Amino acid sequence: MSTSILFSDTPEHFYEQLRECIHQTIKQELSTLKKEDNDVYLKKHEVCKMLKVSKPTVDSHVSQGYYKKHYIGSRVFFNKQEILAYLTRGNKNM
Image (cartoon, helix red, strand yellow):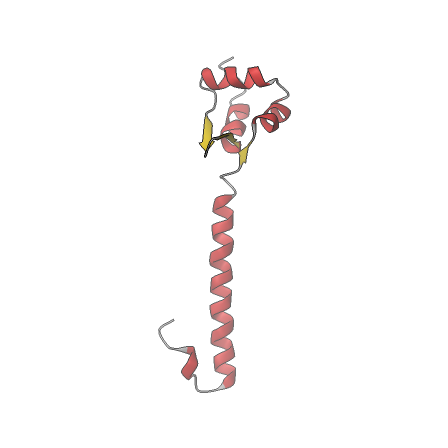
């Protein structure tokens, strides 16, 4: 906002500016959360459950390039979007 809300002419105007500021802040936070939804990471056992395969099969998929494993610290995770993309391709590479 270009004007300071501390020097408004009436209390109603002050509260209206405050509501608008809060509304914009909440809108920004919600848009950030929606972007983060794409970055859902699964553990190997969750991928196994999702695909109904064994852990060695998941390792085989990674070595064949169907999807990648990602390291967060020393732990291994799999991006859920990559797994879903693999599923929508119809396992054509198998």
